[in-house]
Length: 618
Image 1 (tube, one colour):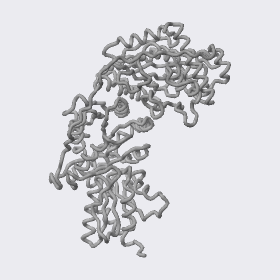
Image 2 (cartoon, one colour):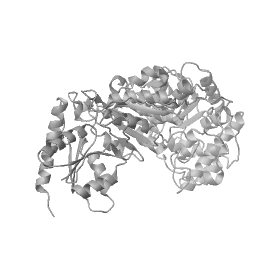
Image 3 (cartoon, rainbow, N blue to C red):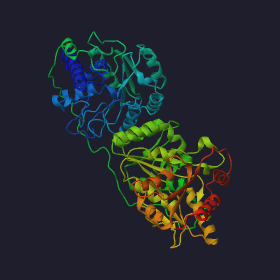
Image 4 (cartoon, rainbow, N blue to C red):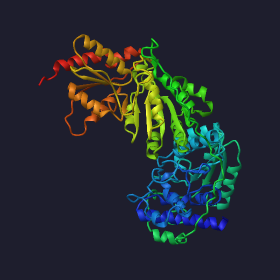
């Protein structure tokens, strides 16, 4: 399009953004209006995209990081012919695909859910990494950010990572409209302030008047021709551009315009321009997915004598899975020698990604790669994944399929102390919509669950342990997700001990001690914390009368609550006692930690004896 046509298209996007927000009675039209010219030039002259085939491997990828500006995105979809005017005006209605903030669950052209600011660029980095290092594709990634979200630390994690990886297939467009939600942003219209920051992370920068369509067109062209660096286009714009009553004025964020009809007239009225978006280039299949025989590592019961750490089993199993499946990738937060992703990195260096100590970028990269069809496993200490909880939450909203693995869980890690102990992770991941939470106790169980995760949907979390654990299952044992294992059982069981991970072995020791005293107890290994094996738990409650849960986790939201959830269907709740970490640990040996927390074999046995002694005999 030429200058006049681009100017008209920008005005149309403004008008349609105003109309959509007016129809909904809510929305962010002024935030959409500031970026309308930026979007018009991109859509008409630079984006290569087939809206009829959103999964086309050569399509460019566009991420609207400032997700509240969704009226602009939907106006662009209308201009491209992807939606019609009736659907545009269904914005924010019940059942409409056009939500307040866009999600890929509803719209096939949306790469990732946005609206929690500071996430679009990190996910865009993941998409660009996939394009450059995995797909070996020439498709480009365009991310439109707002200036307010430049205050988010995750943006600068992403900026540094993109610069380090020389992602010249990535362009971020920053809509510097000066105004945030409650007033001016930190740097206002100081484009150079943003330029200095991006340049410090080895980005090429272009400063431009965001309402000069020719200048914007040249800036995009400069980004396309830049090699060896990502490009940041810093565009000075005006919030509410084109309508005097709202232009560059405070107090109007997130509100429809006071008089939509008058504003539309001031913008030149409703238009019906259609844009023929450039088609993506013809391309071969970007990556094949070789699938061979999966030879998981195997251990025999009781061998080796000292046992095997589940983190070691995870690393070996992941490497084996990577050999069998060419779509599996691994990412780590610079602790691969502890999480054991180093095994994968050694065998498959082309599919291993070091994200350094930047857990938000770690998860965002996994989400970005998942959008391109890869199956990511991202690992760090369980405790450190709490930093990235919002990215996990938004990944769930996106419907992203990612595998997250947290090592060094619980007080059982020993001397390192509480800053390194994952004691909240089960609760965090159980609370995520549609998540799967797994906590294996031995090497063979771990290996099987690592392989099973690759075929699941949504957010999958595996908790691994630092210390060696006895091998109690054979290498051919099956562990269906949603299942459990009954390890001790008799017709005379007085109660049931439910454990997972390291506490399974403590529970078995306690059961042996109790059996020697003539007190038989049932032991359940609840390796699938979500979904939980309701049937087995209910049967145990009916047959033994009491459940005792024991977990190396805080009492809130973990194993005990997962067990309790099995009895929320209205039937009588059994007698339930929970052992968990209720104190603030210090530094001590693993055995001392378990004892101090009251979750070792002696504590389990003592609690069981007390329960049996106080049981009411009908």
